[in-house]
Length: 411
Image (cartoon, rainbow, N blue to C red; front, side):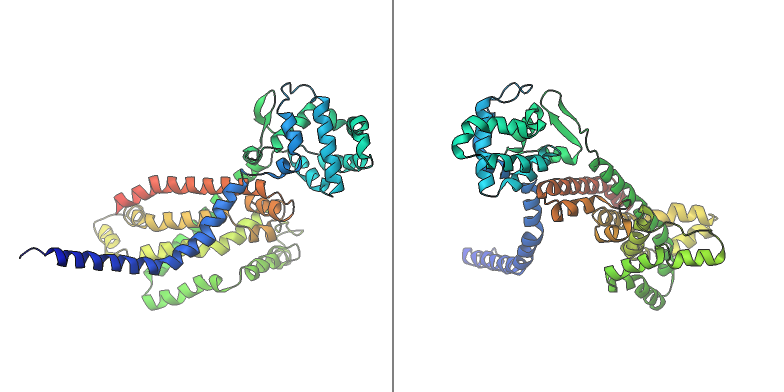
Protein backbone atom coordinates (compact mmCIF):
# COMPACT_ATOMS: atom_id res chain seq x y z
CA UNK A 1 0.00 0.00 0.00
CA UNK A 2 1.41 3.41 -0.93
CA UNK A 3 2.00 5.94 1.85
CA UNK A 4 -0.33 8.91 2.38
CA UNK A 5 0.52 12.14 0.69
CA UNK A 6 1.33 15.24 2.73
CA UNK A 7 -2.10 16.71 1.99
CA UNK A 8 -3.94 13.57 3.06
CA UNK A 9 -1.84 13.33 6.26
CA UNK A 10 -2.74 16.93 7.07
CA UNK A 11 -6.42 16.24 6.54
CA UNK A 12 -6.25 13.20 8.81
CA UNK A 13 -4.49 15.20 11.55
CA UNK A 14 -7.07 17.98 11.21
CA UNK A 15 -9.90 15.45 11.52
CA UNK A 16 -8.33 14.00 14.67
CA UNK A 17 -8.01 17.48 16.19
CA UNK A 18 -11.66 18.19 15.45
CA UNK A 19 -12.71 14.94 17.11
CA UNK A 20 -10.62 15.75 20.18
CA UNK A 21 -12.05 19.27 20.33
CA UNK A 22 -15.59 17.94 19.99
CA UNK A 23 -14.99 15.41 22.75
CA UNK A 24 -13.48 18.10 24.97
CA UNK A 25 -16.47 20.42 24.41
CA UNK A 26 -18.78 17.62 25.54
CA UNK A 27 -16.71 17.24 28.73
CA UNK A 28 -16.48 20.99 29.49
CA UNK A 29 -19.81 21.18 31.41
CA UNK A 30 -18.74 18.27 33.62
CA UNK A 31 -15.33 19.86 34.24
CA UNK A 32 -16.97 23.18 35.10
CA UNK A 33 -19.35 21.42 37.48
CA UNK A 34 -16.47 19.61 39.22
CA UNK A 35 -14.44 22.82 39.50
CA UNK A 36 -17.34 24.81 40.96
CA UNK A 37 -18.75 22.21 43.33
CA UNK A 38 -15.67 20.21 44.32
CA UNK A 39 -12.30 21.78 43.57
CA UNK A 40 -13.23 25.38 44.46
CA UNK A 41 -14.82 24.57 47.87
CA UNK A 42 -11.90 22.34 48.87
CA UNK A 43 -9.40 24.95 47.71
CA UNK A 44 -11.25 27.64 49.68
CA UNK A 45 -11.23 25.41 52.77
CA UNK A 46 -7.48 24.80 52.50
CA UNK A 47 -6.85 28.52 52.00
CA UNK A 48 -8.95 29.60 54.98
CA UNK A 49 -7.21 27.13 57.25
CA UNK A 50 -3.92 29.04 56.90
CA UNK A 51 -5.04 32.59 55.95
CA UNK A 52 -6.50 34.75 58.72
CA UNK A 53 -5.87 38.49 58.35
CA UNK A 54 -8.61 39.72 60.74
CA UNK A 55 -6.41 40.59 63.74
CA UNK A 56 -3.71 42.06 61.49
CA UNK A 57 -6.30 44.38 59.94
CA UNK A 58 -7.74 45.48 63.29
CA UNK A 59 -4.54 46.23 65.27
CA UNK A 60 -1.77 46.60 62.67
CA UNK A 61 0.23 49.20 64.65
CA UNK A 62 0.29 47.06 67.79
CA UNK A 63 1.53 44.07 65.85
CA UNK A 64 4.23 46.21 64.28
CA UNK A 65 5.37 47.27 67.76
CA UNK A 66 5.34 43.66 68.97
CA UNK A 67 7.99 42.79 66.38
CA UNK A 68 10.46 44.60 68.66
CA UNK A 69 9.44 42.49 71.65
CA UNK A 70 12.15 39.92 72.28
CA UNK A 71 11.94 39.00 75.96
CA UNK A 72 8.72 36.98 76.13
CA UNK A 73 9.05 36.61 79.91
CA UNK A 74 8.39 40.33 80.36
CA UNK A 75 5.53 42.57 79.28
CA UNK A 76 5.97 44.55 76.06
CA UNK A 77 7.29 48.06 76.61
CA UNK A 78 4.99 50.95 77.47
CA UNK A 79 5.05 52.30 73.93
CA UNK A 80 3.56 49.05 72.62
CA UNK A 81 0.86 49.10 75.29
CA UNK A 82 0.10 52.73 74.48
CA UNK A 83 -0.33 51.95 70.80
CA UNK A 84 -2.66 49.06 71.66
CA UNK A 85 -4.76 51.31 73.91
CA UNK A 86 -5.10 53.84 71.08
CA UNK A 87 -6.21 51.19 68.61
CA UNK A 88 -8.60 49.65 71.15
CA UNK A 89 -10.08 53.10 71.73
CA UNK A 90 -10.64 53.49 67.98
CA UNK A 91 -12.20 50.04 67.67
CA UNK A 92 -14.57 50.85 70.53
CA UNK A 93 -15.72 53.98 68.73
CA UNK A 94 -16.26 51.96 65.54
CA UNK A 95 -18.11 49.25 67.50
CA UNK A 96 -15.58 46.62 66.43
CA UNK A 97 -14.25 45.69 69.86
CA UNK A 98 -16.65 42.73 69.98
CA UNK A 99 -15.02 41.25 66.90
CA UNK A 100 -11.59 41.74 68.45
CA UNK A 101 -12.78 40.03 71.63
CA UNK A 102 -13.80 36.96 69.60
CA UNK A 103 -10.38 36.77 67.98
CA UNK A 104 -8.53 37.21 71.27
CA UNK A 105 -10.73 34.61 72.95
CA UNK A 106 -9.73 32.05 70.32
CA UNK A 107 -6.07 32.82 70.91
CA UNK A 108 -6.28 32.97 74.71
CA UNK A 109 -9.21 31.41 76.55
CA UNK A 110 -11.35 33.74 78.64
CA UNK A 111 -10.52 36.99 76.84
CA UNK A 112 -13.94 37.71 75.34
CA UNK A 113 -15.41 39.49 78.37
CA UNK A 114 -12.02 40.97 79.28
CA UNK A 115 -11.63 42.76 75.94
CA UNK A 116 -15.21 44.02 75.99
CA UNK A 117 -14.99 45.44 79.52
CA UNK A 118 -11.56 46.94 78.84
CA UNK A 119 -12.79 48.54 75.62
CA UNK A 120 -15.64 50.17 77.54
CA UNK A 121 -13.21 51.56 80.14
CA UNK A 122 -10.81 52.84 77.53
CA UNK A 123 -13.70 54.24 75.53
CA UNK A 124 -14.65 56.53 78.43
CA UNK A 125 -11.30 58.29 78.16
CA UNK A 126 -10.93 61.34 75.98
CA UNK A 127 -8.40 61.19 73.17
CA UNK A 128 -6.04 63.63 74.92
CA UNK A 129 -6.18 61.44 78.06
CA UNK A 130 -4.92 58.29 76.33
CA UNK A 131 -1.16 59.13 76.58
CA UNK A 132 -1.36 59.65 80.36
CA UNK A 133 -4.13 57.31 81.54
CA UNK A 134 -4.42 54.74 78.75
CA UNK A 135 -1.85 52.16 79.87
CA UNK A 136 -2.88 52.50 83.51
CA UNK A 137 -6.53 51.93 82.58
CA UNK A 138 -5.59 48.90 80.50
CA UNK A 139 -3.57 47.16 83.21
CA UNK A 140 -6.15 47.99 85.87
CA UNK A 141 -9.01 46.56 83.80
CA UNK A 142 -7.95 42.92 84.26
CA UNK A 143 -4.96 40.96 85.47
CA UNK A 144 -4.68 39.10 82.15
CA UNK A 145 -3.16 42.20 80.52
CA UNK A 146 -0.15 41.75 82.82
CA UNK A 147 0.56 38.22 81.52
CA UNK A 148 3.34 37.97 78.90
CA UNK A 149 1.80 34.78 77.49
CA UNK A 150 -1.31 36.77 76.53
CA UNK A 151 0.73 39.18 74.44
CA UNK A 152 2.54 36.27 72.85
CA UNK A 153 -0.85 34.80 71.92
CA UNK A 154 -1.89 38.17 70.45
CA UNK A 155 1.30 38.27 68.43
CA UNK A 156 0.62 34.77 67.10
CA UNK A 157 -3.02 35.63 66.32
CA UNK A 158 -1.88 38.65 64.32
CA UNK A 159 -0.05 36.57 61.73
CA UNK A 160 -1.80 36.72 58.36
CA UNK A 161 -0.58 33.24 57.42
CA UNK A 162 -0.55 30.81 60.30
CA UNK A 163 -0.57 27.10 61.08
CA UNK A 164 -1.92 27.65 64.59
CA UNK A 165 -5.36 26.34 63.64
CA UNK A 166 -3.78 23.04 62.64
CA UNK A 167 -2.02 22.95 66.00
CA UNK A 168 -5.37 23.52 67.73
CA UNK A 169 -6.97 20.78 65.62
CA UNK A 170 -4.24 18.43 66.84
CA UNK A 171 -4.60 19.57 70.50
CA UNK A 172 -1.19 21.27 70.37
CA UNK A 173 0.02 24.78 71.13
CA UNK A 174 3.23 26.74 70.70
CA UNK A 175 4.66 28.07 73.97
CA UNK A 176 7.15 30.98 73.81
CA UNK A 177 9.68 29.18 76.01
CA UNK A 178 8.81 25.47 75.91
CA UNK A 179 8.02 25.30 72.19
CA UNK A 180 5.47 22.83 70.85
CA UNK A 181 3.49 21.07 73.56
CA UNK A 182 0.10 19.47 74.25
CA UNK A 183 -2.67 21.91 75.10
CA UNK A 184 -3.45 21.98 78.81
CA UNK A 185 -6.91 23.59 78.70
CA UNK A 186 -8.73 21.57 76.01
CA UNK A 187 -7.84 18.20 74.50
CA UNK A 188 -10.87 17.11 72.52
CA UNK A 189 -10.08 16.98 68.82
CA UNK A 190 -7.73 13.99 68.75
CA UNK A 191 -10.23 12.08 70.88
CA UNK A 192 -12.96 12.99 68.39
CA UNK A 193 -10.84 11.84 65.46
CA UNK A 194 -10.12 8.56 67.24
CA UNK A 195 -13.79 8.15 68.14
CA UNK A 196 -14.86 8.91 64.57
CA UNK A 197 -12.46 6.34 63.11
CA UNK A 198 -13.44 3.66 65.62
CA UNK A 199 -17.17 4.20 65.01
CA UNK A 200 -16.64 4.19 61.25
CA UNK A 201 -14.70 0.93 61.56
CA UNK A 202 -17.46 -0.68 63.65
CA UNK A 203 -20.10 0.46 61.12
CA UNK A 204 -18.02 -0.95 58.26
CA UNK A 205 -17.60 -4.31 60.02
CA UNK A 206 -21.32 -4.53 60.80
CA UNK A 207 -22.22 -3.71 57.21
CA UNK A 208 -19.80 -6.42 56.03
CA UNK A 209 -21.17 -9.01 58.45
CA UNK A 210 -24.77 -8.23 57.48
CA UNK A 211 -24.20 -7.52 53.81
CA UNK A 212 -22.03 -10.49 52.84
CA UNK A 213 -24.56 -13.31 53.52
CA UNK A 214 -27.36 -11.17 52.08
CA UNK A 215 -25.39 -10.58 48.88
CA UNK A 216 -24.49 -14.27 48.69
CA UNK A 217 -28.15 -15.22 49.01
CA UNK A 218 -29.20 -12.73 46.33
CA UNK A 219 -26.47 -13.93 43.97
CA UNK A 220 -27.61 -17.55 44.36
CA UNK A 221 -31.24 -16.80 43.41
CA UNK A 222 -32.67 -16.75 39.90
CA UNK A 223 -32.37 -13.34 38.31
CA UNK A 224 -36.06 -12.42 38.49
CA UNK A 225 -36.31 -13.22 42.22
CA UNK A 226 -32.96 -11.57 42.95
CA UNK A 227 -34.09 -8.36 41.25
CA UNK A 228 -37.28 -8.34 43.30
CA UNK A 229 -35.38 -8.71 46.59
CA UNK A 230 -32.79 -6.20 45.45
CA UNK A 231 -35.59 -3.62 45.23
CA UNK A 232 -36.12 -4.09 48.98
CA UNK A 233 -32.39 -3.52 49.57
CA UNK A 234 -32.54 -0.31 47.55
CA UNK A 235 -35.71 0.88 49.28
CA UNK A 236 -33.79 3.04 51.80
CA UNK A 237 -32.39 5.04 48.84
CA UNK A 238 -35.93 6.01 47.93
CA UNK A 239 -36.81 7.11 51.45
CA UNK A 240 -35.82 10.47 52.88
CA UNK A 241 -32.79 10.35 55.15
CA UNK A 242 -34.65 12.47 57.70
CA UNK A 243 -37.56 10.00 57.72
CA UNK A 244 -35.24 7.01 58.27
CA UNK A 245 -33.41 8.77 61.08
CA UNK A 246 -36.68 9.86 62.71
CA UNK A 247 -37.88 6.26 62.57
CA UNK A 248 -34.83 5.17 64.58
CA UNK A 249 -35.61 7.89 67.13
CA UNK A 250 -39.08 6.39 67.53
CA UNK A 251 -37.59 2.92 67.93
CA UNK A 252 -34.75 3.72 70.33
CA UNK A 253 -36.17 6.39 72.62
CA UNK A 254 -36.96 5.64 76.28
CA UNK A 255 -40.65 5.09 75.62
CA UNK A 256 -40.04 3.80 72.11
CA UNK A 257 -40.99 0.59 70.36
CA UNK A 258 -37.99 -1.49 71.43
CA UNK A 259 -38.14 -0.56 75.11
CA UNK A 260 -41.91 -1.06 75.22
CA UNK A 261 -41.56 -4.49 73.62
CA UNK A 262 -38.81 -5.60 76.01
CA UNK A 263 -40.76 -4.32 79.02
CA UNK A 264 -43.90 -6.15 77.92
CA UNK A 265 -41.92 -9.41 77.72
CA UNK A 266 -40.40 -8.81 81.14
CA UNK A 267 -36.84 -9.00 79.80
CA UNK A 268 -35.90 -5.66 81.37
CA UNK A 269 -37.08 -3.92 84.51
CA UNK A 270 -36.61 -0.37 83.30
CA UNK A 271 -36.14 1.29 79.89
CA UNK A 272 -32.68 1.13 78.36
CA UNK A 273 -30.87 4.34 77.46
CA UNK A 274 -30.25 3.74 73.75
CA UNK A 275 -31.04 7.07 72.11
CA UNK A 276 -28.42 9.84 72.06
CA UNK A 277 -25.56 7.39 72.47
CA UNK A 278 -22.80 5.97 70.27
CA UNK A 279 -24.89 2.80 70.02
CA UNK A 280 -27.74 4.73 68.38
CA UNK A 281 -25.35 6.34 65.89
CA UNK A 282 -23.80 2.99 64.93
CA UNK A 283 -27.16 1.23 64.54
CA UNK A 284 -28.79 4.00 62.50
CA UNK A 285 -25.79 4.51 60.23
CA UNK A 286 -25.38 0.75 59.68
CA UNK A 287 -28.97 0.63 58.47
CA UNK A 288 -28.46 3.62 56.18
CA UNK A 289 -25.11 2.52 54.71
CA UNK A 290 -25.83 -1.20 54.32
CA UNK A 291 -26.86 -0.88 50.64
CA UNK A 292 -23.44 0.63 49.86
CA UNK A 293 -21.94 -2.69 50.99
CA UNK A 294 -24.51 -4.98 49.36
CA UNK A 295 -24.38 -3.52 45.85
CA UNK A 296 -20.60 -3.95 45.21
CA UNK A 297 -20.67 -7.42 46.76
CA UNK A 298 -23.71 -8.50 44.75
CA UNK A 299 -22.24 -7.24 41.47
CA UNK A 300 -19.05 -9.27 42.05
CA UNK A 301 -20.79 -12.41 43.34
CA UNK A 302 -23.19 -12.40 40.40
CA UNK A 303 -20.25 -12.75 38.04
CA UNK A 304 -18.63 -15.69 39.85
CA UNK A 305 -19.20 -19.04 38.16
CA UNK A 306 -20.80 -21.37 40.77
CA UNK A 307 -19.20 -24.35 39.06
CA UNK A 308 -15.88 -23.50 40.74
CA UNK A 309 -17.29 -24.25 44.17
CA UNK A 310 -19.16 -27.32 42.94
CA UNK A 311 -15.96 -28.64 41.38
CA UNK A 312 -14.08 -28.26 44.66
CA UNK A 313 -16.84 -30.07 46.54
CA UNK A 314 -16.91 -32.88 43.97
CA UNK A 315 -13.16 -33.34 44.42
CA UNK A 316 -13.59 -34.00 48.13
CA UNK A 317 -13.20 -30.55 49.67
CA UNK A 318 -15.36 -29.73 52.66
CA UNK A 319 -17.88 -26.88 52.27
CA UNK A 320 -16.31 -24.36 54.67
CA UNK A 321 -12.66 -24.80 53.50
CA UNK A 322 -13.81 -24.76 49.88
CA UNK A 323 -15.76 -21.56 50.45
CA UNK A 324 -12.85 -19.91 52.31
CA UNK A 325 -10.15 -20.88 49.78
CA UNK A 326 -12.04 -20.61 46.49
CA UNK A 327 -15.20 -18.50 46.68
CA UNK A 328 -14.26 -15.92 49.31
CA UNK A 329 -11.00 -14.72 47.61
CA UNK A 330 -12.95 -14.06 44.41
CA UNK A 331 -15.35 -11.78 46.32
CA UNK A 332 -12.57 -9.66 47.86
CA UNK A 333 -12.76 -6.92 45.18
CA UNK A 334 -16.44 -6.31 45.99
CA UNK A 335 -15.87 -6.60 49.74
CA UNK A 336 -12.96 -4.17 49.74
CA UNK A 337 -14.79 -1.69 47.49
CA UNK A 338 -17.88 -1.80 49.71
CA UNK A 339 -15.81 -1.46 52.87
CA UNK A 340 -13.94 1.54 51.48
CA UNK A 341 -17.19 3.18 50.36
CA UNK A 342 -18.95 2.63 53.69
CA UNK A 343 -15.94 3.72 55.75
CA UNK A 344 -15.32 6.96 53.85
CA UNK A 345 -19.01 7.93 53.90
CA UNK A 346 -19.38 7.16 57.61
CA UNK A 347 -16.27 9.18 58.55
CA UNK A 348 -17.82 12.34 57.15
CA UNK A 349 -21.45 11.70 58.10
CA UNK A 350 -23.23 14.55 59.85
CA UNK A 351 -27.04 14.42 59.96
CA UNK A 352 -27.60 11.05 61.60
CA UNK A 353 -25.07 11.53 64.47
CA UNK A 354 -26.52 14.98 65.09
CA UNK A 355 -30.08 13.64 65.42
CA UNK A 356 -29.63 10.33 67.23
CA UNK A 357 -26.11 10.48 68.68
CA UNK A 358 -26.42 13.35 71.13
CA UNK A 359 -23.19 14.39 72.86
CA UNK A 360 -21.90 10.84 73.21
CA UNK A 361 -22.51 9.79 69.61
CA UNK A 362 -21.23 12.84 67.77
CA UNK A 363 -18.41 12.62 65.27
CA UNK A 364 -15.78 15.06 64.04
CA UNK A 365 -18.11 16.29 61.28
CA UNK A 366 -20.53 17.58 63.93
CA UNK A 367 -17.76 19.64 65.56
CA UNK A 368 -16.81 21.05 62.17
CA UNK A 369 -20.43 22.09 61.64
CA UNK A 370 -20.51 23.61 65.14
CA UNK A 371 -17.52 25.86 64.41
CA UNK A 372 -19.03 26.94 61.08
CA UNK A 373 -22.59 27.58 62.27
CA UNK A 374 -22.36 28.60 65.93
CA UNK A 375 -18.87 29.60 67.04
CA UNK A 376 -18.19 31.26 63.63
CA UNK A 377 -14.63 29.95 63.71
CA UNK A 378 -14.36 29.07 60.04
CA UNK A 379 -10.57 28.86 60.14
CA UNK A 380 -10.57 26.10 62.77
CA UNK A 381 -13.40 24.33 60.95
CA UNK A 382 -11.34 24.50 57.75
CA UNK A 383 -8.29 23.07 59.54
CA UNK A 384 -10.35 20.22 61.00
CA UNK A 385 -11.87 19.54 57.59
CA UNK A 386 -8.47 19.62 55.90
CA UNK A 387 -7.08 17.08 58.36
CA UNK A 388 -10.14 14.89 57.79
CA UNK A 389 -9.57 15.16 54.02
CA UNK A 390 -5.90 14.25 54.43
CA UNK A 391 -6.87 11.28 56.60
CA UNK A 392 -9.34 9.99 54.00
CA UNK A 393 -6.78 10.40 51.20
CA UNK A 394 -4.23 8.52 53.30
CA UNK A 395 -6.68 5.68 53.88
CA UNK A 396 -7.50 5.57 50.18
CA UNK A 397 -3.78 5.43 49.35
CA UNK A 398 -3.31 2.54 51.77
CA UNK A 399 -6.28 0.77 50.19
CA UNK A 400 -4.97 1.33 46.67
CA UNK A 401 -1.43 0.37 47.66
CA UNK A 402 -2.20 -2.88 49.41
CA UNK A 403 -5.80 -4.02 48.90
CA UNK A 404 -5.99 -2.81 45.30
CA UNK A 405 -2.70 -4.49 44.41
CA UNK A 406 -3.84 -7.78 45.97
CA UNK A 407 -7.11 -7.62 44.00
CA UNK A 408 -5.15 -7.19 40.76
CA UNK A 409 -3.07 -10.27 41.59
CA UNK A 410 -6.21 -12.28 42.34
CA UNK A 411 -7.70 -11.14 39.06
